[in-house]
Structure formats: structure tokens, C-alpha cells
Amino acid sequence: MPPAIAIDGHKEKNTNLETRSKRRFPLAFLLVGLAILGAVIYLVYANTQTNAAYYMTVSELHTCANCATQSVRVAGVVQDGSIVRDDAHTSVRFTLVDGTQTLQVAYSGVVPDIFKAGVQVVVEGRYSGQGPFQAQTLLAKCPSKFQNATPTTQP
Image (cartoon, rainbow, N blue to C red; front, side, top):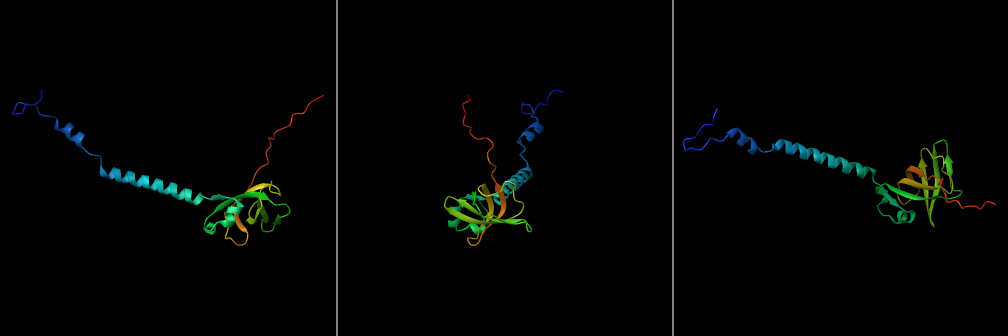
């Protein structure tokens, strides 16, 4: 069927096509999208804040003013002769050494098998500034299996 001719001699435009192209994106979809984006950003932020812990040296921890309110990680070497185990309560107390600075540490939980004097450890927990560092996590660094070997000459 040929298109209808208007009185003024011009062809009638297809009004359905014209109104479809002028339709705007529904406001409800935009609001739902913004709500989902906001929820994702909040969840990422909240998750990183709960798992965040400052990494400090022993000397930095001793001078820290607000460490009692946040979780911190401290690395050092277990001092010789400082380990006191309480197997009945699965706890251990020891001294952490970093250079010339020392830190008393109290930890309750499973102690790694390689934990002993002279081993590098990382403890995570809270420090009030008085008494021992209250560690919730104790990680012991594994000794390296790959060390530089000095070549020997064979006769």
C-alpha cells in the first residue's frame, strides 16, 4: 500500500518509529544501577578496612600513639631463650627482636612447627603500649631451601 499523502503534499511520517527513537532510558533502571554500584563500592571498602593492618617495625610500634585502636603487623626474630610455652592453654610467650629493640609477645593458638628461637616471625594483633603485644596471628618464615652453594673443585 502506498504511503498516504497529506493535504499539503508531503508524505506522512511514520509516527511509531519517531516516538520510539525519542524514548528516554527509564529512570528506574538508572536508580537501580546506581544503588547496585553504591552497594558494591561499600562492600569493597568495608572488606578492605576490616582486613587492613599496618606493617611496622618494633621501634615504630613503641612510638605509635594510636596503635591500641587498630590491628598492626610486626616482624622480627624470636630471641634465644625467651620462649615460654603453656601447652595446657595452647599459648606461648616470647620476645621479638628487631635490631636493638625488643617486644614481648603473647599468643594463644596453634603454633607453627618451625617456630623456634632465631626464626623470623610476623605477628598481627593489638598493642596497648603496656604489657605484651597481644597477637591473634603468628606466622613463621620458612628457611630457604635454595641457598647459594659454593662450587667445590673435585680432584
